[in-house]
Amino acid sequence: MADTTVVIATRNRVDELVRTIAHLRPLHVPVIVVDNGSSDDTVPRMRKDFPWVRTVSLGRNAGASARNHGVRLARTRYVAFSDDDSWWASDALRKAEELFERHPRLGLIAARVVVHPAGTDDPTCVEMASSALGRAGDLPGPSVLGFICCGSVVRREAFLEVGGFNPVLFFPGEERLFCWDMASAGWECCYVADAVAHHWPSAVRGPNAERRRAEMRNDLLTTWLRRRLSAASGHAWALAKRGLRDPDARAALGAAVLRLPAVVRQRRKLPPSVERQVELLG
Image (cartoon, rainbow, N blue to C red):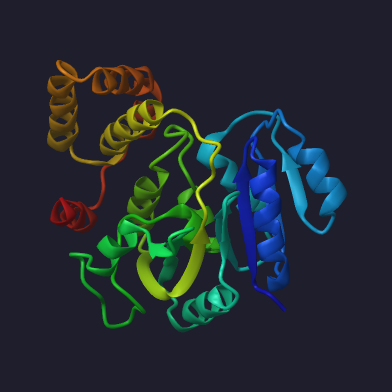
């Protein structure tokens, strides 16, 4: 019996989601779809055509933290994340389960993500494979402090312990803060090239400038939420200077400032050992 549930957060991409479900069905694993307030027919179509999938409608857009709802509903020891435009290779989840069994302090597996139609590895995977953190002797791959969410499998216990993806960030770039929190709690995250996820990027995407602003905003928020004050203030100052000539950077800084009350409530410093790892990665 499968010990991994696949959780998918989706919004207004029903055609891509249907393709993903078709790829996941042969795996015979539980699938939970969390709908982020779609205005298309995602929820009724999923419930009608795929009754074996548990479809949850949030009625609003919770961003990346929608996955937290799916993990809480899962009843397996492990949870794999897919996006509505990605799916898992046939043997990937079995391999992940075996690795979790053999490595009790392993909290997250960052898989190799193959991007289609080219069939090439995502550049982030190349970076993870050569991680400056190296590889501990009792882990199945290089240690990482970041990953691609649609190619990740987590130990459910560890995910719930650290609180999942932080809603302050919304989306994107939620993975790094999650990794920092896992490391702070004593859980290891590592890259495993033998576990493979496939990603066929959706054509339904927001403007590039909007995503760029969100990435810069969340880079700063992540620093504010966890790093020492000198690093947090230095990051803010660097973004402010960049904003003098870059309107996207200026907008990102303004958006981050609006979230400061939530940052103050949730801020806690990384343990020294994790801070050193973050500094090593630059």
